[in-house]
Image (tube, rainbow, N blue to C red; front, side, top):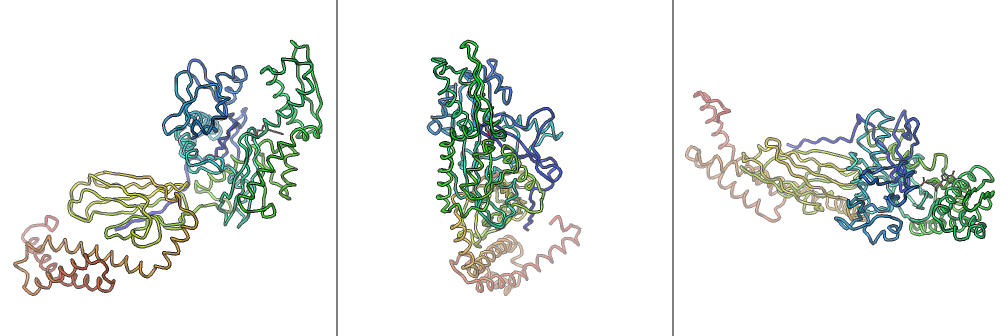
Length: 621
Ligand code: AMP
């Protein structure tokens, strides 16, 4: 009765893209010719700035264009929308200070911006960025990708991850996996090839700093701890240089020192100087202000930059120390160090990190692209591709359904790769049964009562038909984030119902271990209980069939057979009702019942044969 089909997403017709949806910049990469490649349309940069500008006519500009317009008119621009994804007003009070629009809480207590009387959700805005990224990818690939792996910071909670998924859905993308940024960076460097090890990922971007400690076990990554500062990045390094400049310029600037336009010009000059200092020992800052009769030039050495930013860099090391402590590790335990984010190009940053961890850091790939590249590696693997190694998460416990009699039909087995999907066929138990309650369970035990119930739902509206005629396909789809969607569909009528549950929710490693240990300890008892449950169901079916047919032929059945049958039926009924019959007893009662029904079956067959001979077809009966 059961048909089982297990297929991992295979041979995708369209490429699956990896997207780094960043706080300041976003970009995509895709697997081409055996390696991940950043999507870079001819004549365009790979990067889509995560910036918005709202035209008065309601048009929303995104990316470079938005950033350009924002320079002239910051009052209608919005940046760093990622900080607001899935957050409430209280969570982001500090960040809202720099937002020129009113913010309020919408459905689910998450932030909405009010732009010209229209409410805009951060996930909606992020979807515009994703659309732009996908458009760019379409230009390069010649086909619009509709599936993606999207990265998020390791510390993102469920709501923030869900908001990211919603943004993708709004952009017409199916998310194959939400991947942690540090995991993506490690994948880009192929660290999943290690059997085991600890990785420190140091990510200093434009406006944020994150450090994550990861554990690799057989190619599977686990985040042990994260730390950082959501308001520390390259912008602060620029500000440190601006401060040096202002200290020197103050006497000549007077009140003009606080003018936004002048500060903005200084900041841009400082950033250029800082970037230049990453490759040259000296660089110049330059400020021209004709109205102040000012044409200022100042040469900075690397040593000067380093002195200015030293306190900031020291703060990143404090965070590294905290992350290690939270993971109960010391620097000596760290096997690999990965650098991510544009600011790790500053030689002093790299030197400091390498000194702290006492080892050379991975910096071979572009630190702005490494997360997108890793997302593309993951996307390629999820699309069914391989490189000489494979990263696949597996489901630690089986997922199944409670069947009639309280047994469990496992649909997705323990250690199946995720994402995974499987379909199992069921039917109705009683004549004219129009509904079915489906109990979804997780665990290795044979009886549903000993497993963990994840949720129940009802399939209603099955057309009345004899028992066993309905064809109910129950499909389990476990996505890569461990979210399980179960759909039940009665094939002849098309009625369907579904439920979404989160199997791993709140289930720690220890609990998984305990559930597995329980299943081993109870293996024999479970086997027996399962057999008893199945035998009871079988006897139930036999009893119903007997009842349905006996009355019509009772008079023709010899008395002894009739008495045997009635006795066997009574015994079966008593065993079904019994709390704890043994497996052997139950088997005996079932076998006796089967034997006792044989004369009835023979009689019925005989009838059918006679009817057939008298001109009726068997199918008419
Ligand atoms: P991200 O958010 O990862 O794109 O990082 C952007 C930050 O990296 C900005 O603050 C840039 O000024 C900084 N950045 C980019 N290139 C360099 C470079 N060559 N040297 C120093 N900082 C850089």
